[in-house]
Length: 253
Image 1 (tube, rainbow, N blue to C red):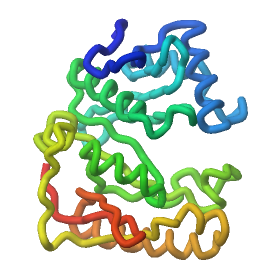
Image 2 (tube, rainbow, N blue to C red; image 1 turned 180 degrees about the horizontal axis):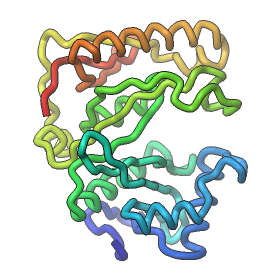
Image 3 (cartoon, rainbow, N blue to C red; image 1 turned 60 degrees about the vertical axis):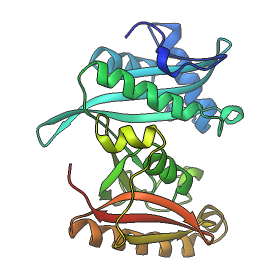
């Protein structure tokens, strides 16, 4: 993967692999710009090289040669399936909500398919509702795993002092479900889909009332664990009535 990824290009914006030396430093700088990471918290350029050299991905998004976004994935394996684990995807603040994140995900998919992968996974915070909508409704990922407090409690303001609960997104790259969603033809959910609903104001609640936010998080955790253990998967996400809702139903590969 040495050339620009053509099928996700738009005027003025280019997605391409990051290469040796100074190129990899771009990935470090973008982590600091996107997430306000201190130097000690960034994935160093040496690890970006390792990710690339062991079959992973290190991609940059550029607008008129200026770096504006970044994606990094490692190769993973479990249950006999080799896949890509997308560890980081981010866009600098001035370019957020402008489609660059989707371009990066589509570039990851294109490269993964070209190299024979069927699956990309990543984790995300269940309380990040816009992220949930993007992952499930816009990309076609499904959710069948919930990991409580994956990283432990941290001092990061992004985590608001809460346990770092995470959902695992499974993106089956060649599935009809994903193909249809990427072509703006979403599947029809069953009428018996179960909802796990969260207030749309959850980020404000996290900032202003952490104790209440943790109660909501605990309830969401119990619901996910109960429904996943009964064989349901999150296959949809929608906003309505000042709430965001995960839609759970039976799912087979």
